[in-house]
Length: 353
Image 1 (cartoon, one colour):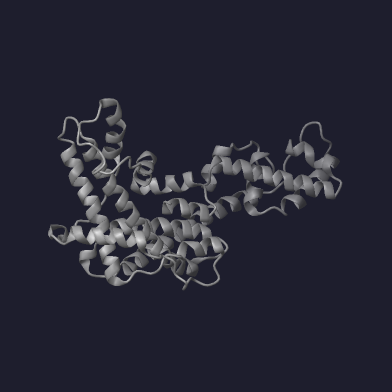
Image 2 (spheres, helix red, strand yellow):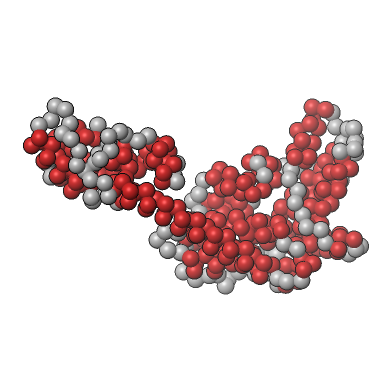
């Protein structure tokens, strides 16, 4: 099972959303789907080394050529021992027991499952990274030669597909073996504004990117490299979020501090309007500041003489137009419920419609 699918299900997150987020760093969503869901239709040994018919070749060839390939070259690629090391790595992955009884404490079961892969020993870690990058390197070399062929054979395509699939297996194992590192970093940053799941999602993406960028020839452990990357990205995310909250608070304060005083609307006597003003003031003040801002702007309450569009408010608050619509609906429902409790629906309803 692909590690991205496991993570998305474990976080109860829509996989399309995760795919889109990763695609912003790794390529288009079509490329991501190609890279993470490789279909191997046969092994080089089992397929005849004959040119494929055009109709059978086109789809496989396109998939192979469009799969994004990112690898870190190592001097070990020039040695005779690298191919044997790759064979040993793949054999070890096929037979090893990846369960680790030393799991992080106080984690929900759906998150603990992400840590079931045992930690990597230093030499094992180096071997996995060398194997993953050599498999990608080999696939890239074969692909370059393939572009010179007028009609590629089944054997050529299957060889590239096998390398890509094996590289993905090794990559997923590295990611799973280091997931607990993400937990240890993000726990320090969890607060009411930044949930554990939200930070975990970003941390996993950073870990994946770090796996693709790590250079074993530099001589230090992957955990050192990944720790710095995850910490830096988490701090940056929190700083950006604080700026967004500050911008929202400033926008809200500008409108909330405006008086509710306004001329009596046509068709409503002054006594009724005064009573309505008092009721609305009390009810609106029970909303949170962002809901107050949206409701007053949308319904021209206070000193506003015109209503603001969803897009206006979205730009001002730094959120999506649909999110503004949802917040307005929630605020209106709150006011209606509170008005019903005080039996003043007939006063409030004309303003909310």
